[in-house]
Length: 196
Image (cartoon, helix red, strand yellow):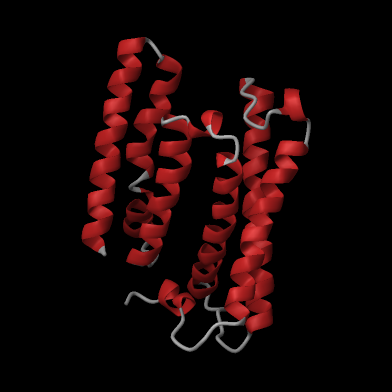
């Protein structure tokens, strides 16, 4: 799986660099930072692993890379957020699913993940996902207030876009939680926290 992750990092970094060159050529300097920042963002799991000695499995790194490719590269750089009406909802739903898996890791890191405590684990998963979704919406709101970037579409939709984003993230975590409660032995959830 490490090879797959390396290939994804290389290909997306190369594509992002090409988009950055395109941005410079057409004078789209406002998009340049988005194109170049992906190269750094792709390495965040490895940076966290080195700096903080936090175990990040290859599976979690792959899930993270897929999310960055879908959300930041395809959404922002390729501009699917503006050209495909449902793409933002899809990415927020996926963020709910992925932050649910991150919740498993957080429980494992702090030593509170217990296989027999399914109801607490499910409640933690949902709560953690809602916390991350809320923090993300706070960041978007801060971008609107301080940088005049209307990523929440405040001027056109009011709070509708924010609530829609949080609801689909919540739905993603509910689906993961139900799947977790119905899991079988040696399920995908166990693989998320193990290095196998």
